[in-house]
Image (cartoon, rainbow, N blue to C red; front, side, top):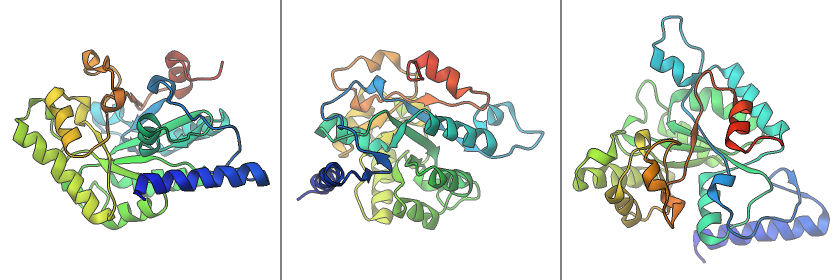
Length: 269
């Protein structure tokens, strides 16, 4: 039995037990699960970067992409209060490509780069709300001063967080040669699999940029999906297979998540 088949079998078994005993699965009451593919745009994917307190002299770019811990927790409280059930990018790909089951009102929380505050600030808040999230790691940066080390990444993985590919050095893949893009993607994938001792399946394009060659490399590398950013490479979004152009909403420091949810159609009616 493959890893994916085993994972699906365990979830089906848990759901069956839940129906018989009236217990909970993944921390939410049993509801009839979604068993057919739904449109990706109906499953919001949020993208976060920095979550920390900034100094008064922080740059405009850093302020743009940083939420305070207080604001981030308030957003997670809103997510919980609205009845969303967090899933990983791996869950989403398993659903879209293999018919995997999802809970009601699924939402993906994703975090780019592998920053050290993802372990020290974000991880405890996620555990408090019993949320799962996906962390896309720049593998050559692991252990550097602003980034998590392998021990921290492994601990998050062991506690149920989803760890996936964000290239080796975070370049714009769309302007690299085929060989350079291949090394960035495959090198990062191999590094993660070596340390995690399990397959990784999903790529987040740095800056959201990609092209047909980058998609082809991701497929050839054995990656089953890839994520971009809302508003980037829109022309490529209109494809029969959307699993390599999964659209994420980048949350900025001054973002009002409730307003964004209403604007994008996934907020309360």
